[in-house]
Image (cartoon, helix red, strand yellow):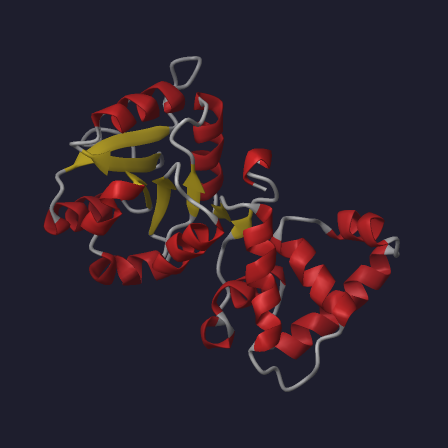
Length: 235
């Protein structure tokens, strides 16, 4: 794993706290390439807001990986603009997360939650997914977030079929998969999506997913996707 100060800037940056020695070891073991090639810069920050911010700005885009018990050490207010731009994303390790906790972490600005006892391949998969713009949350949480779109007072009524299709795109289904799941044609799926986008006032799939996440106040397009099934044990 190359040092953060000398690594090429085209590598993804993964940051954890200096005091998280167990997490540091897990990240190194999980993210070192099998052939010796590095895909990520791995860096450690002091547990001070200024140090976290400076390192995030220097290595952006970056992924902060943190234990739930240390989450209060993150300067969310100062990181908010970087979180909104996706220059910084946050992955939380927690063995105590229930549905309410997953939602709380998400509302705070975190992009994913995984258990402490996760396997090395799974943590690598989660890190790779989040740095690629996906979310790493249980499917039922993503579905619930999508459903909340329909209690936000849309001026044009969204149909039950459109609601169902939005839930499916939020958990990662492609048009053909939606068609097969709902026993309708792919062209019918496209027709429903065009109608849905018009009613939500968005211009495409990622914008519709962002609407499902944040509501009509944050409709600008974003380069982000939602992973369909991060871990079946979390469903």
